[in-house]
Image (cartoon, rainbow, N blue to C red):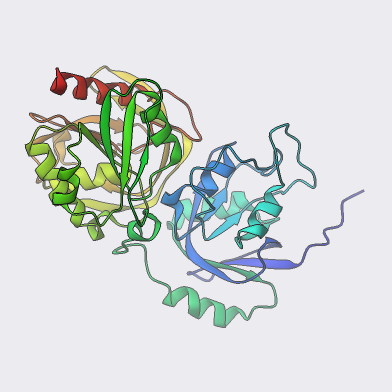
Length: 374
């Protein structure tokens, strides 16, 4: 016998007028934001708390989400960062020895809007065909035309500086685990906890600084290296970082950037960025390492990319060379400076969630600091 759904009806509305029906879970109110899909099969709590998803509704392509609940260890920030969460099926029960609450309880307690019962396969195919677009989740009794007007008046992702929204508002320090080897500045544009955890496990004392921190203040910490974090929004709107990147690199201070940090590093040296049709979001993206002719399966979450020219050059940035390329669509996945200890990747080597193929990049960062300090 089919289970009767007792939830209140809801719908997801896209800016092109396409409507997808479902049922409410979590907070029951309208929500606005860009709609993207994520292909990860697990790790929904890490996805929910990834600051790079600020301002977005996340559609999970895997159909069963919530079956192991949530816990107090898997958060990548203090609270969910998404505007809304879209799933095909929300299990009536959850089971895990680590769980402290259900997914629905978690979203409700943080006032995050969710919708279940959506045909996520059809929705994903539509986004792949038409591109990521603005959208809204609302209870079914919300007027369609009024909601569509709100969607169409909501800002586009292009030109938005969302990093300042999710960045820390004051500096804080994480001590090295074991013997301290280096002092690293984490330039916070939406940093994930696992990146900081990996650095401390490598013997780094990490000072996390707000995205608005001046170059002079960064230099006053006398760092051995700088980590430029992931984050949401359009890299072209985050301009203060570029000067800091250039000044630290000129002093031969090693710099590692990921995701938004990768885009900011590329732009600092003259490259351009552009918005992808529907972005890369998931834990299964193949990337070729051109230096070693190997393939990594990577965790990704971004809607913008660095422009690549013919022959693998980076237009406007002759000092940068291409190091990694996406095997799905041929986009830039990594660059390195030809003379200075600066490198970056578009994906997430901290992999939370995702495979651990790319953890070596943190070792590479440590090696650069060792070489500088020796």
